[in-house]
Image 1 (cartoon, helix red, strand yellow):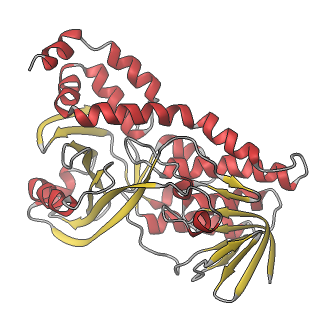
Image 2 (cartoon, one colour):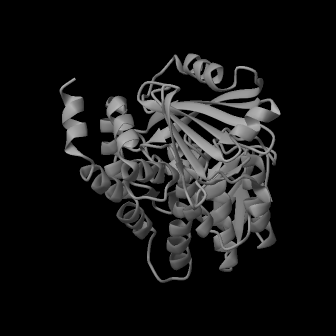
Length: 376
């Protein structure tokens, strides 16, 4: 039996950062990853400013591009560009970004176990192919289909959204055209959007929908590819699931906690997950550290802190998604006719603007835009 203060399952941003933070505070930590690292991860790969600010170490070596121009389109038409003084995000390849976080954790003393597919969680023990890892706390950071959540009977009513992403090699002229831009194409898929993020040697292009079932996503992706890079060479195409926020729900059972995608902590409108993976890791580290240090009797405070911190924004985001995904033309008209609204909207997409501020800016938009739309 392997015995540690904390056993973390999943070496993505949430798990790796949690392991790093706990080891930095003196805890003994095992980090279990089902695959061999580095491993490819389907993701747009945008690290926002607020995500970067959570890290107390430099990860700039993983950056691919730094786009400053937000481009909003409607079904590949009616292009609106907004140039920002701050980067929209730093784009990364997730194998390198996640690897940098894992490397920092290992340097702090975390014991990494690769190729460990978790079978079950029983009390404070994690079973992996005949091995048993025992911890005072078990942290599930093993993604949207979390084995930890399932065996600990947490998030039993989970709902998922869908996305498809491609890595596309394009001619140098097209790569240069998008080098400083992040494109958000609304209406590319029903109740969803498409995106183009520039990487060093290719473009990451994807489509997502908040609908739990969408068999036509690949067809929507093909239309997006045809519109933006018909001359590109497809390097890879992968589909993946995103957890849908259904409302605050228990993330703790006894000494098992969930974070990141495993906890369903993903923006209900944009699908942004990297920032919330890091943020939930930070909140979990505080609660677990207090528990291990004898300052609190249980981990229930983590659940309260997560939903007090993130819950109000997510509830607003859920409402925004229902309204805007149902009225794409209205969204675009507001962006086109009101620069302040457009800037605020791009701020929401990049995580620099809260949903509360965004809704406030929407109310300042000219009433004639709204009434004109409703009369159509």
